[in-house]
Image 1 (cartoon, one colour):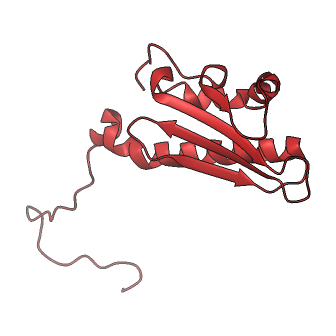
Image 2 (cartoon, rainbow, N blue to C red):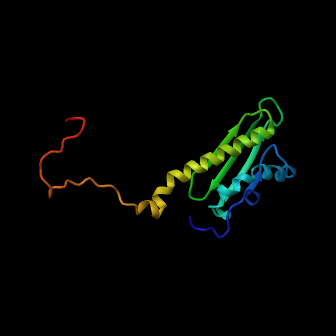
Image 3 (cartoon, helix red, strand yellow):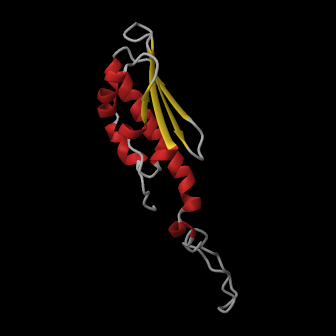
Length: 139
């Protein structure tokens, strides 16, 4: 993995949307701090996170976390947990899983080490005798 000059962090990329105030931002950033390690492989200038909540502290509240990374599809995670703290943890963990899945899907194409591994080839060895070998199962 190449080092990124300005790695993305939650504190730098997080915006709070509907249902949250700027006062909630620091508390939410602390909850999402475990995403920093996963976001570090992306440029901060090309990464955005936005968290919002609909019907906050009501029975049907819905927390949404959206992630935009340049060159990738937008990732949207939602949670209908009634406890706000649990809902934030739920969307955070789901985003981490989706980022990991996306990286796993993309990595083999862009990982030189994986591309350079020799592929096993089945070759017929005609230099030896040409009699068929008897396997233990067929003998």
